[in-house]
Length: 146
Image (cartoon, rainbow, N blue to C red; front, side, top):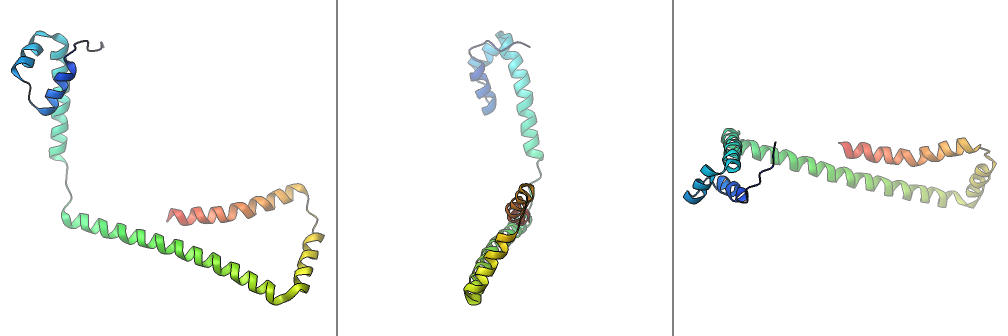
């Protein structure tokens, strides 16, 4: 396959796209082998494109309206889910803060002492840290999939 070397090839493509080839360009196409091959191939492709456009099934207005309503409903559900997730996280944070403040300094000291006495090896600490980081990310990803 050789590249088209005629300087009027772009002009011919534009004319074929407009569906009108002027008499001057028509005379050139008859005398130029590259342009006549381009007209044959590009013309066939453009005709196929027009046929495909003409045969394309356009959905009815009712179907499009229904799809739009379903999409709006799904977007509203996604906004509500995000709002609920933020509300739940804020509620949990407030509940933990209240529990710690109500239970007092003695319980906080006991918790600190219990945490300090836990002896974990490095692999267990890495596993625990990975789990603590990955769990919220997995939950967020699961909510995003819906």
